[in-house]
Length: 259
Image (cartoon, rainbow, N blue to C red; front, side, top):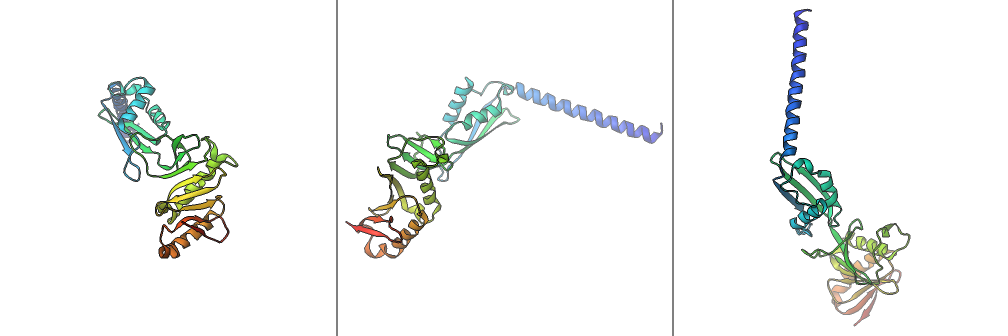
C-alpha cells in the first residue's frame, strides 16, 4: 500500500473516531439533561391586541398539575413529555397554540398564543360565552372582560358544528358579526346585535339612542352602504338622537321613525 493510501486511510479512521466521540458526548449530554430535575417553568403568554390576557400563569400551572397529577418543577426532565404538555394546553378553550421546550439550564419554557374573542353571546337560556374568529366557544374569563360585540335575544344553544349546518341562527349571527368587523365604518359604530323572537336582526350603535333594524342578514353589504350614506349625509344635520329607529329592511331605502 502506498504512502498516499495510508494517509487517506488514517484520515478516514480519524474522522470516524471523531464522529463517534462527538456522538458519545451528545448522547451523554442528552442523558445527563434527562436525569436533571426541572428547575423552573417559564410561561410566556402573548397578549391580545388590547394588551390584556384572559388567562394567567397560575391557570396554566394548575391545568398541567391536574393533567399530570403533580407539579412539573422538581421532577426529572426525561419523565416530562413536552408534546403532551403542548397537547394538554391546546385543549384549554383560551389557548390557540402552545410551544414547550427545555433549555440547557433545566428550565421548562412554555409560549402560549391566546384565542381572541370577537363576539360575546348571551343566548335565550341565559348562557354567556365568547366566540373566537374560528367560531370556537370560549368561556368568560375571571381575569378580564373582553370589549367585543355583544349578541342577545332569541339565540339558540351553542352546537359545535353550527357553521356546517345549512340553516342555523348562530351561523347567521356569526357571519353578521364578521361582516361588521370587516367593515371599517361599521366596526367602530356597532355595540350590540339583538335577535327578536321572529328571527329579525337589530343592531345598537355606540353613538345615539336609536335602533338600526336590519331584518334579515341578506344583502348586508347594501344595507351597510345605505346606513353609511345616511350617517354621513343626513344625521349630521338633524342630530344623532332625533330618530327612534332606522329601518334598512326596504330595498334602496332608509326609513326613519322620529321619537
